[in-house]
Image 1: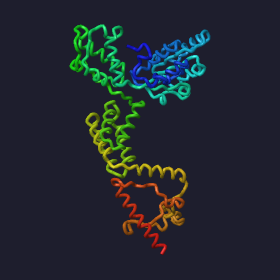
Image 2: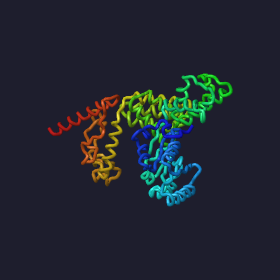
Image 3: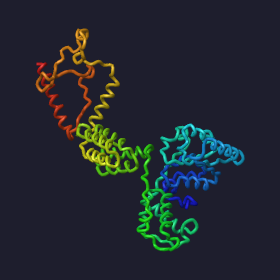
Image 4: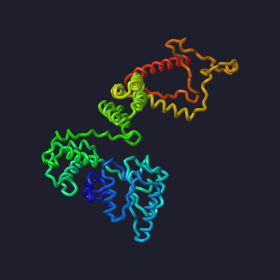
Length: 427
């Protein structure tokens, strides 16, 4: 059922529609080297083959799973000879190109540079992470989309009606309710959708006794597809980012969804717990100091129970963090203090608050005139604790939310005491 022409390719109109990038490149006969980046079953290999067919250039397919630099060099040598004889380039299609390490990827550089080959690489991984900069600078990254429900339904219906490559020679009919069910189960993967159709037809025995296929037949052959999730690749970072931002946005339902997606994909619960602990300080902070305790307790519970029992503790922490008052005052205060420390790290503490464990240090004034706050009203004294050039610097600015509202009151109270003491000294 692989499309025989670009017109039959589904789901990539952003590349092949009128005046789109690939359509213009083919029309102008200026096909560049490119990296086709997209999820499984979106048509990367098919697109590469159709581009070669449309451009009428020689096409050599390789897979980085089975091939190495030796095979690449052999293809390049043939391409050189072909170019000397016929004055045209050769399209080298490298499937799973991310499986080549970055040193192996250098083998493509000279011939891509001089036009001997037009490299079309296919990958499900983010090229920014998996391909070296030199190769990326010579290739156009082309992003393919996963197939939408309507595309998958068209693909399935085409397979049922096609008499040559599909099931059109058999009087097979499907209940209308089946199409969206199968499309949803495929999760954007056209190859998987066709496999589902084949399973449905094979298991149901409809080829031997034609009849209407219904949802009941679908339930009998239904197989649960593994969640698309790569614990080390881009999807790992996309999903933890989605969880973090949903928590920050106080969207409890989205937060629980992304937690379930990650755990369902096999993510380590302790990794999620570490991120929740970080979130408790970075985005909740002192607006609710209990948030850090809840996150730590969830980590301990998951460590003790494991999956699946411990997952509920993570869900409890997610709900608490999502609904907690938010403040990044602690985060920004520490960043400001770090920046100040980097720029003025040589400044010594005031003599008054230095330690004086030896007689010599006491003679030099270390700790002299230090006033013990507990000896004073409100356990507070006006003292310069920052180096002299930094007197008056403020890093922490609490918000008027949650417990930080109380912290603001305390800071304001101590500030009034400072003003009162300063006014008294002046008078």
